Image 1 (cartoon, helix red, strand yellow):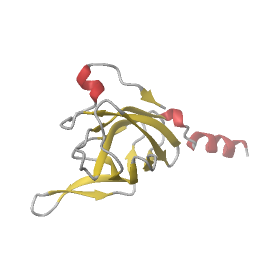
Image 2: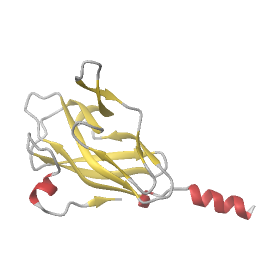
Image 3: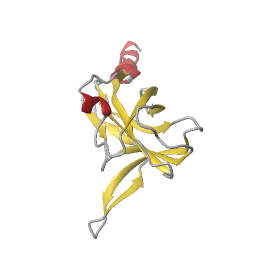
Image 4: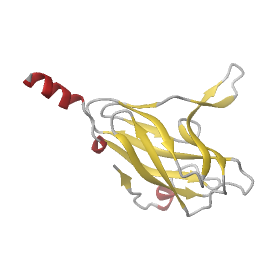
Length: 156
């Protein structure tokens, strides 16, 4: 029985194993229907975890999906929903332009540079983790914190 209890403890992952760094989004045009959130997600644990969902307040967007970009047979990049994003044990996953990202569908208002979007990321093992995505310029290719050289807060 004691071995079983130790085994259960060994495979349990706490939110402390997952760190969300520099969450950010691009500003959008006033007529934009969609936006995206990006971040680096690190897993200091010994077991892989899966980002399975994200959510924002209904005043920000109608709904949220995890997306990735894929290249079709003609070499055209297309976005498509994915069920999850794996964060490997002792590794990280990058949510970035042209790759995995959190898609905000049906924006209720434009994303304005300098503002923040509260977002909740849900993981299979670590549960829900709240973060705030800083909105950068409309042409941003990385976190506003990286551009300014400032240290972005990490969320655990």
